Each structure stands twice: as C-alpha cells, then as structure tokens.
Length: 353
Image 1 (cartoon, one colour):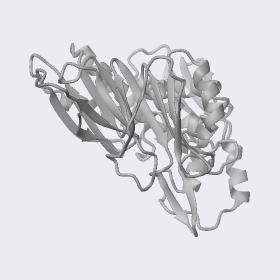
Image 2 (cartoon, rainbow, N blue to C red):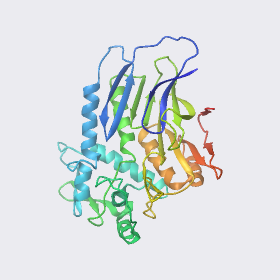
Image 3 (cartoon, rainbow, N blue to C red):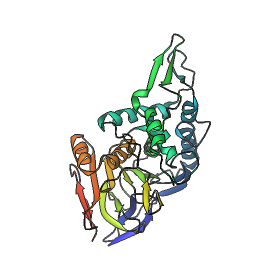
Image 4 (tube, one colour):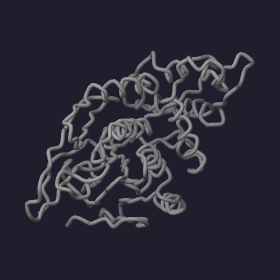
C-alpha cells in the first residue's frame, strides 16, 4: 500500500511504501521559506540536534549572492553594472569571495556548453520581458518581436567574461550593460546541495532535503528503506497528489521541470516560463515534464530546464550521452494521452495505474 505522507510544490511528492510495520525511527522535520518558495528537511540524528538556525543562515547567505529579487545581492549588482565589477581577489585571502555565486556560474557554463546553449542563464532580459523575472509580474498582451529581437542580442554566455588585473582582482565583465544573469533554473538545486553538505558535515547520513520541488536524499527514510518519490502527472488539471510514476532513491538528487504550473494565458494562448534562448519566445514542444537524476541537485536542476527547451528527442540524446545522469520524460501524444521515456541507466521507475 502506498501512503502519502508529504508533498512538494513542483514535480513530485514524497511517498512512503509500507507493507508490514518496520521500526520507524524518529526523524527531525524542519520547514521554512527561501528563494520565493518553501523548503523541507528531514534527517536522523542520534544526538537530537536541531539545525534550523544553521540552515536558515546558510540559505540567507546563498540568497545574498544569487537572488535576483534582492537588489543588493551579488548577482543583482552585476546585472545593474555598466560593464564589470570586482569578482575574486587572488592576493587578499581575507576578502570575502562570492563562492555561492561562483559555483552557480561555473555549473551554468558547464551545462550551457554541453546542452548546445539551450541552458543559458544570460536569458534574464527575455525572462523579464515575458513577466517571469524580477520585474513587474504582468502578462504580455501584445507581443513585440522587435523588442524581443533587440533583447536577445544581450543573450549568450560568451557575453560574460573574466579579466585579471594587476591589483590581484579578477573582474567579471559583460559585453554590454544590458547583459544580465539569472540563476533561477539552478539556484534551488544549489541550495539543496548546500543544505545537504551542511548536514553531512554534521555527521548526518540519513536525510531528505527539498526546496521548491528539487531534492537530494541520503541513506534511508524513517522506515529504513530507500526514499520513495512520486513524479506528478504533468497536467494543469492534475492535483499535486496525482502521481504518474514512482522511483526509489538513495544518496542521489532529483529535479523536475515542466510548464504545466508556471504559465499565464492571454486570449486563449498559453505563455509558459520555459523560454528558448535562441528565439526569445516561450518554447513549445510535446515534452510536458523532464525529471533528471544526478549525484548533485544543482546538476539535475540545470539539465531539467535544458531538456524542457530542447524537446523530447534532443533531450533523450543529451541525457543518454552523459555519464551518471538519468532522465525520465513525460510527453504528450497527438490523441491527448501521456507517454513516458526513461534513459533507464541506473534505475527503474514504476508507473502508477
């Protein structure tokens, strides 16, 4: 019997599978808000320690570097800079380096290159235009291709460079003042990793960390089994508790991206938040959701977004070419039904009837 004991905002719900009555260990559960969403942390600690304060402080520090909604964050200051700003000091070790920003930037560049440019954090000007960014949230009622064409000239990871100076500083530079960065498709995954690493540093081996639907698990669940996760039915009509498939995870991360929740509609036309960096328009293909499994959640988060832009066939080819990364794709058929495809390199997903 499958019993629902919790749920998240995007992509999946947390399930527990129970046939008998195994010993249930006392896990600590912490919840809070971060990055415009919520987080849930569950962990087993023989010392009974409460890490809420440490987790909250860590997430505050992460947000201070990568949150575009905070005008004082490092990323916001770079976005509003005319050309460049001090980034890292190679000589003065006492200077505080923006290491959270650095990790997001470096992983973004890696995924950008491997995804043929379809994962591109420099898409921020386009995100703002369509009303999904840090600017005013409003639907675009009259699409102006001329504006989109002008904004897309700022898009491209080649427009963000680094310059070393004689004073020991590395400067982060942009090709033009309009170039901006957006880590919203990777930052939640990074936050999950950061909290997981914090727990592991405290000696915690069995844990579950989730932020806004992206997660990482270690060890076993309270029943001493692998963590069982349910993947949502990718439909606007489906409830958060409607499950398409389940998967068991241990010492792994998972992230799901889809267009079925974050969109708006104007005159019968749906505009989804997955934007194609090569066209500047919301991507339209038959891929309904992409779930990616990887060792770290930041990687899973980034590739899940990349796949939604790539579409089904290119996503299959991309994920199958990558080692230690798996994908589960739900896509729409011409008759309105939902089909699935799994790269199936390391796990088997169970379809829910």
